[in-house]
Image 1: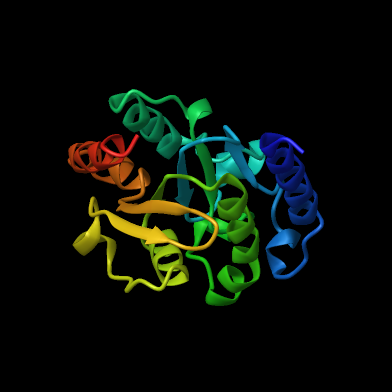
Image 2: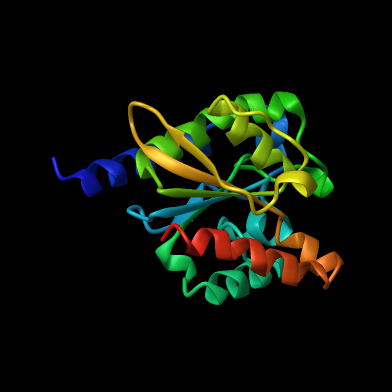
Length: 195
């Protein structure tokens, strides 16, 4: 079977699994699960924290204010959202955009693991502390606060694929503090180096 067809099949099944998921209580308060979006043969995958209000309404990641910043950051390195794959650590919105609970991360990350395995990105941009901690620890690396490791590149290799993990501040940081946009733009240049 064609490799892209296999990826399409896996992501479609994953989407169905997430839609029917009741492993934590977030399914009770969500409007729509937000599985992921973008190119299934993307060389770059971005992983955020969890859907926000607008993402929950539309069922698509990064469509609110932080999504507009994210689009600008992508364009700053010559990419469009349809050229990358974008998803979150959690697939359902926590009420009032609160931080994810450890139990929710544990329940939901097997879906993220399946996305990483299916897409096999050359570069993984982790957006914020929660995504960064999970992804680095998943690949046996020491997780530190995003303020200390943002923009750094971590090389990983396993039996399935080889990739670079680049921790980044979440684009929402620039919606609260406009000075963060230039930091994010500088950090996104690290992604451009590996395209």
